[in-house]
Length: 293
Image (cartoon, rainbow, N blue to C red; front, top):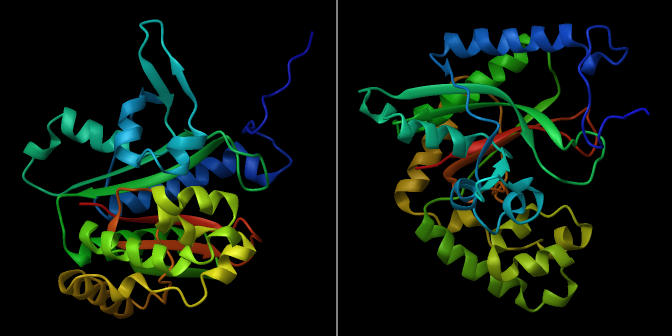
């Protein structure tokens, strides 16, 4: 009897013919990440590969694609619902609170390199176990902190020799801003509801901002002329975003503003960003993140 590897995962081997599966290359990339993180004052944190399901429902959002469609969830022998880690932020914040790291009188800067698990259709660039680098800076609300994190990511890519990268940024403001914008977006799309994709129809009431992230050509066409969230953010959020732009310019980090960039997780506010690589085809997003308060 022979056993083959499960769909959506892959082995990392010492002498893999495909470079992207070669363990020597993985070790090199991880060494650059760890070195750069240390230079920026980040320390490594490691959390369990599974957590209580409720952590992700509350932290990521029950209407997010991750929680509603993609988690590997199971009941343990004690009848408790557990989920394989689909993303890294919620476990880090759980650990931060549980281990009283807030008692340390300083900004906590943490990073991790870890496998994540999401049940989704296997395709080039998307796997059911993917390996992710993440960084969390906790305890500093200034725009300087947002920009430092972006600068660290760009420094890693520069050391690795990556080229043809584009940084997109946006501000999604405060919770109150998004409530007002949500209504305006629904009003804009209401007359075209029947023309939306099935996924966007489901999101229309539950999480309409996620429609902005749709890759469906019909949805993209319908969103032309949609109101911009930047017209709904508060004065404080607008000043924060302007400072982010100035600091990026001062650091000679080119960027483009994408007012439809919202990210797929419910905990973000103010700054969100995404970095795409022009040489990767359709699955070209290599980084994404944002602020959460």
